[in-house]
Image (spheres, rainbow, N blue to C red):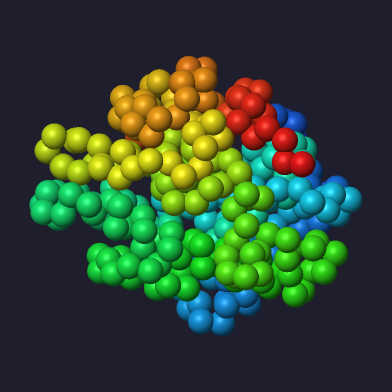
Length: 316
């Protein structure tokens, strides 16, 4: 009797194992890993490029085609709580196929603007969002609510990374992306794409630098008043980047779609460069639905690849 029970248990275990294996194989076919094998990949911790970095030291990730020498860089900026551990692989692979190099930059992504510039603090400081973004991008102003240091800011980290690559990856000819007189990035050879907080950072940079191209995926919605939900004043500042090179998407069903549409108009992004997405959501049955599920659709759903290609243009 014990042998029969043991045999039955073993058979049941084998059946369950095979069922699980079959399910995993099906999942892999539905969600195959993106193949970057044709591209050189470099990972550099921010502290390797700049020893003064002490916080948020997950690696920058770089991809490029060694056969292309003079192409543009696509700088990827994540959303709040994001990191380079998880990057939008389908979009970044599309950028590589369009001729770009890709840099997924590691920078402090938490807290986000909406977690700091709110309530009484926002009502007493209507420029909170602009000061926050300036601190996280340039690191050259005083903004006490976040602990970011100069070396943590986006542009200082990008600059140090380009200097590191220029020295340590000679075949990449990275020095072409640095102005040797000023030491600053050559923005005409750099495009910036970002999701949520990162999209807002891209838009803010476009008001201060003449960047090759800007792509904002549901870029953050900043307010100047917590009660009236009036959008932040910084959106009204004139773009230094040509508006023809600024692109934005948002999903019509995401929570802040109304504000995002208003922001695009306030930034004077040409109507043909704004994409109000409306396709059904990508469902993941293995995960709980987030409170604002449509917010990541623009960067997550491969059905929008034709729009990605239009916004990216050529990286050559």
